[in-house]
Length: 202
Image (cartoon, rainbow, N blue to C red; front, side):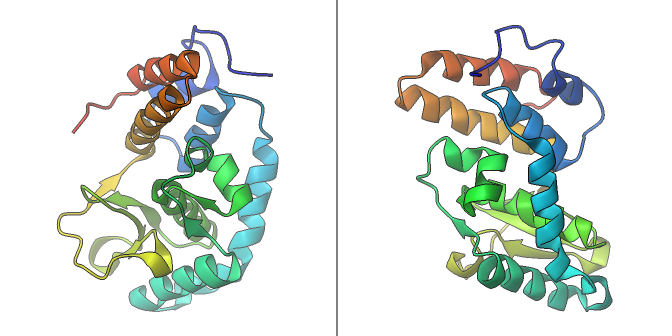
């Protein structure tokens, strides 16, 4: 099955977009389903399995938690950033399976892994970089989503990105990528989905 019909108002993505901000995994999987079939249960099971290496992380210091998460994602799971992966690198389910994709998707994966291990986590962003935020309040540590390839330069201003904001950025990227591929219908569909989100461009 290919992309769903044009009317997005009564489908899972629109329902999640219209309500309170959902979990990253829920909204990103609903987004992926707008462009084709996927096995959401299999993706969640993969994340559950991957998170087992993080169990006990809540007992570590804030900085040690971030270091351990980075080590698991980089060395044990083999996750890596690839800005040029096109549409595949911007679909969460594809990146979970391929272990490679846009840094924004790696940030979402890292946050989901930490949450499954019992640690507060979220996606954070600066104007040019994506981060995994581990912990909260005074214990918050941000980890460059490029992992071993991340910049050593201070990130400057970093802010939290909820699932709605992350999906907005992903849809902007998908619209551009689909246009470059000549898939104009998919590009327009990404634009319609973006309009369903309660997010204004920054």
